[in-house]
Length: 328
Image (cartoon, rainbow, N blue to C red; front, side):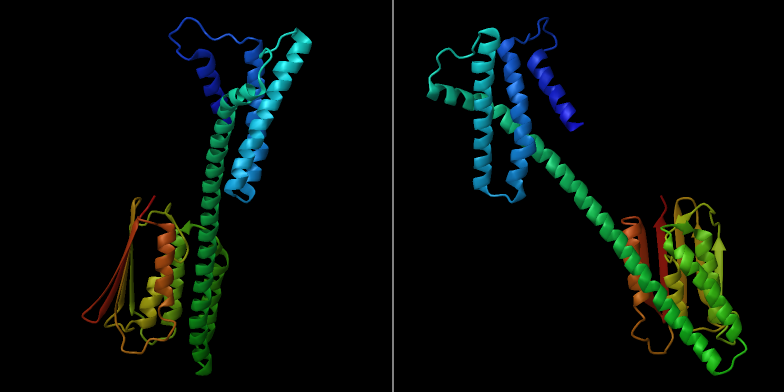
């Protein structure tokens, strides 16, 4: 398309110039031969010389390449206008030309196809370079997303298996229900997590299952208050974009019916708001405590650049995380 646009403009300015004029340029014999030589030189320089120059660029190669294209233009023009036209039509463009004058004259004529060809090649080269860089950035982003997802699943499984291990060790009757819940959650992680986007309802169901699994480990049954308001069923989000905040609260917050963890979700057609508040526990955090939130911030930056806010506050022994996402 770029080549077509280029030649359309060249034809317009060469033959039309001013469209208000009533007369247009009419090609004669040597104008036609010049166009042929122009086109041939243009594409020899474009398709061969410029590629060789930029395989391993050096200024010496650039000068040599331009010199080769000039020699090609001059030799082809001599062959066409001084030999072939003389043989076919008994006409020559230059009558008894002086060699030096012919060389200098064609230096001017050859500059247009060589310079235009170089500029067009460079323009398309940089367009392709930008497209390639965009492709590489997309691939890197997809690779990073896959890596971050891979971080989430082992982290969750590690915590949950530790919990179930404790139940089995103390011969709790909650062991089998916990294993069943883990099976349901792993079904989500196996299938839903591989998708780029999932229904918001799927993420909510995953969070409910996660909470129920945690409740099996505790005597209290009302330590989490989950309020879901006005959920648009058509909303799609990346998997694990909300659950890290819940996981962080359950892992590090106080778990009691007197100080429940508060989880609120509001989702409309344009904005999603997710708020998690918990009382900070006195237990010492383990070394893996920061993976979830750091991971979440990286994934938000990838999926919602410039259209999300994640505010985290720690006041009066209360930890609050509020996530707002502007939906497309």
